[in-house]
Length: 176
Image (tube, rainbow, N blue to C red; front, top):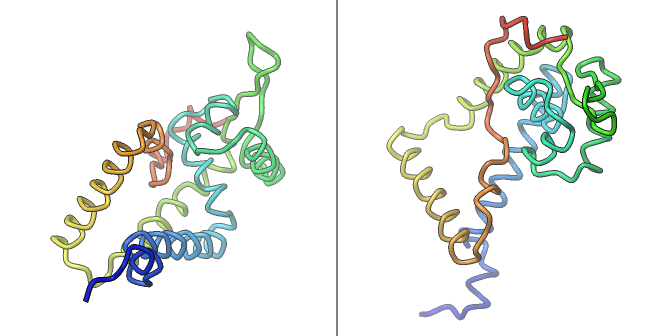
């Protein structure tokens, strides 16, 4: 029996639906884990991660890396600033631009954040053989490539920071 096109798209087993549900579940679970263990949200974690590798970038640059509008980023940065985890400083050459820096307080959280992300990744892949994980990654990359090619999507979409890129927390020079 052949499913018609509409039935295929509405199917609970449609790959796109499964990917979206898995993504939302992963994001929600990681958000809960971060909140419980570190006291920050996943969105805040992503911003801190970006600054851990590129401290002093502009609000516009961090918004681009996170795939956000600058207007969406401002309340996020406000919350991080109120928690004393980041500081805004005007750019020396253009006072209209703010640069973002991690604070020393953030340094104490980086180890916990890294550990939290590592443990979360382990629980995420628990019971899945390494070869199956490799095939899954290859399939997901191919799906992304197919869509990017078919819809002429900008390759910048794939550069949005999602994965943990926490730098060596003992590097003092990055913090203010």
